[in-house]
Image 1 (spheres, chains in turn brown, purple):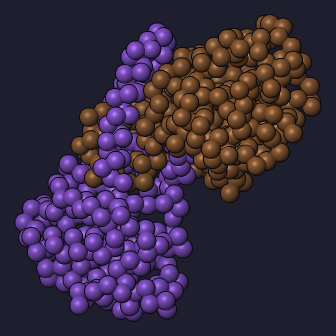
Image 2: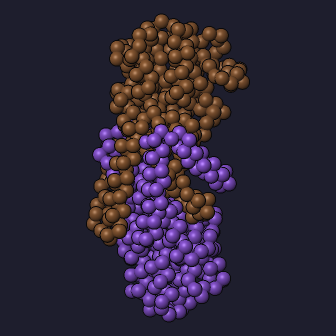
Image 3: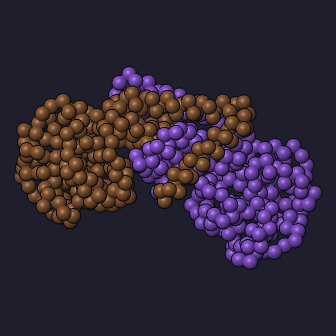
Length: 276
Length: 276
């Protein structure tokens, strides 16, 4: 049975541990909060182990981006030879660069389950967090098919439905659009005193567009600054579309305005129909 | 029993009729599609009536903004004396201006249930569409408390939870932020070829921010152009916040970036806690 350590038993790490539990993995956990480990052991979510890093075939980093890199650096001599290190971090180039520019007898294969919640902590973790979600795998150079298969089996075990393999660079470029931009937009949408004043004037569209404005500011600050060029490019692209719509409204250009919305609707309908 | 005619049995009108049915109202319906009326009568959602406008104490316009105004103009001599005309139209000044600048022995009291779906037509209507939703009432000058009470009773009967009374001008200013801006944002977010390419890289935040991009382009074109100054003001305010976030990212200003997100989160948490 493969031994797996989840490092950081928060919202995502806790959910990974819960979802891997009772599958064909022996799951250990590490957390700075001893109570979380005790609780998870007592509830059979993880197994007790005094030196999980040294024991594990796979280590899953479920920490913030900078903390993940720090943890690896501080524990670099402890990992088992040929250990597979993976993670759930929202940007993939920092860890990829670290491993591709060193020689540690370890294989880093990035992982990114595209799921989360607008709350944090082990207390909010759930076994079903990743059910049906997209999962992205970013192998470093030299990773074997067998090693990539191990990360794939973890993604499947936690319930992810669609697994895509790409480079760390491509991942970071794409998620700037699919994940970071929505968080920037929700924040900008709520960055106004009107938010409080008009809560009895909202409907479903407002609730949905602003849901992730209940943002973890420390995590997302790291994610944005760690993916600066990509997110700036996406904000600029979005601003151009916004300006295009604004110009059409200002000039009463019914045709352009309708065309923009129709084209968007047709593509969105196509995607949603393929998915659901 | 009060006689009510729903004009336009589409997504919203159909839902209003379904929700009013079996309450203390006698509900009639008008639709350009005779099949819809026949179906609704056959399923006891509305009652058969050959001249519903002439019979009704209340007429609820559930058409597009321009069509609502056209319907009123074309039928102005048919309404019963002292009939209350209300509607579900997303902008309130056009009908308000029409009625406040004429003398028709009719009372217009605007209504806006803040609910909908990213689909259209009677086929998608549902009795529970407005359950728990916000509802805004915009009485014209001279409307009595009793008449406003009738519209309130309709809002309650269809399931709305929070009912707010304000002016048409104030309504249009506020919903530019709470309803129109989210639709503009979702559209701009999806106005890129990336939408199709990266569908396996999306998570919940993307799904939520882009949900209403499956937009009814003809309806929303009318709504945006009919509320031009207000929506432009909101787009500009939003763009300023977006630029503020962009600048903080470009200059690596961790402090400002974290502060913006923390302030937004605290207010959003407060609102959500009060609501749910």
